[in-house]
Structures are given as structure tokens and as C-alpha cells.
Length: 116
Length: 130
Image (cartoon, rainbow over all chains, first blue to last red; front, top):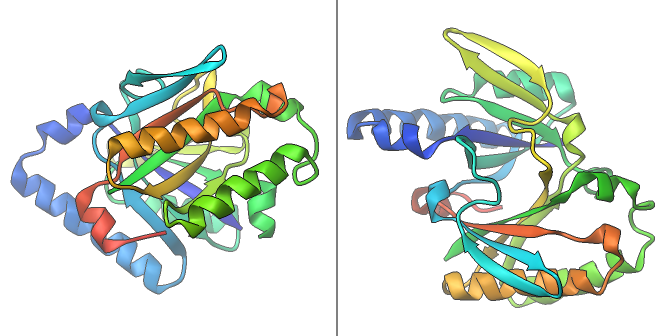
């Protein structure tokens, strides 16, 4: 069963980290990804740039408009993601618990994606 | 340069639509997808299950608290994502517009309302691809 694991982050927390903390956090996250990739449990993923760098393209009637910022203005946003390919919810949650850095959302891919 | 496109819209509308795979919209989506994959602009992506299926794990001191639902309860929800590889932000915006343009020809219920474009972190982009 395939899941998306979304790493919940905030620009504020990222900006507060000093370079040494930042280095440690990257090392932990890198090791977590590497181990799970080797085990075949993670198939791809990325870290995103800060939410403040986002642009949103929105439908307005028959046109599209481009606005600065993420699609919702919130304290938290997605800071990165990974795609899990595991036996089911139990394993997905175990892996989610082992993420070393912060809060996460775990959501199955759609039925169509599970089948492909 | 790699960007993540977050496809967002009104989930109640998505849930009202019919069986996946059967609609004309799906056929159009496949044409869009195949064209941009072939051109090297689309690197990967997935459709997600509804936010009602999500579980969120939050840190509370040394404990982890597990709660049902997405990390943010919002009217617009993330329904899927696409990873693209294009020269710059202008090209990313142009590509996102074509997705919304493609969508506009489809049934109202199939529509993506907004696409958030986020640069993918430089460190991660060099280390991993989907």
C-alpha cells in the first residue's frame, strides 16, 4: 500500500535554527531517508523551499491569476514529502513515528494509484 | 530547476464525481501527462486519497500524539501533486496554467481550483528524484 508522508513545517522554525542545529537536522533526515530507501520502503521524495517562496495559480472565472504565497495562509505548511510503499497502515505509522524532526501527515495515495 | 505543484480544490466536489478511470477527463489528463513526461517537464506525481483518510502525528514533548485527519483543516484541500523540471518559475507558472486550462474543458466537478508552486530544496533535489 502506498502513502504520502508530508513533513509539516513552518518558516519560523526553520529560520530560528542555527547553522549547527540545521546541520544536525539534515544529517538525521538524510539518514532516515537513506535507511528507508535501502529497505525499499520509500520511493522518492523531496524537501521543499520555504513556504514564503511559493506562488499560487488560481482559477478566476475563465482566467488564471498568479498570487504570491501558498494556497492557504497558515502557520504550518508542507516542508517536504516522501512516498511510502509498505504493507499497510501499521507499517506506515511505525515509519511516521520514527521521523526524527517534527509533525507529519500520512495519507494513502488514491485507489487508482494503489492499482498502478 | 525542480518545482512541486500542489493541486488543490474543493474536496466535496471531488467526492461527488464518478468512478475514476471512466471519464473523459481522465483521458484528457493522460494526454496532458504523457506529453509533458515525454518532453521531460513532468518528473512524477500522484493522486492522493481524500483528506478524511489522513492521519497526523504530532510531537507533544517526548510523546507522539496520533490524530485523525490532515495537519490543516481547510476548505481547499491537497488532492495530488506533480514534480516538474523546467528552466525557471515563469515556465513553471506556464505549465500550471496549462493544467488549469486543461481542467476548464472538463466537467465542473473535476476542477483543480488552485495550484501552489514551490521550489524543491536544492540539497534534496540533487540527492533524490521521484
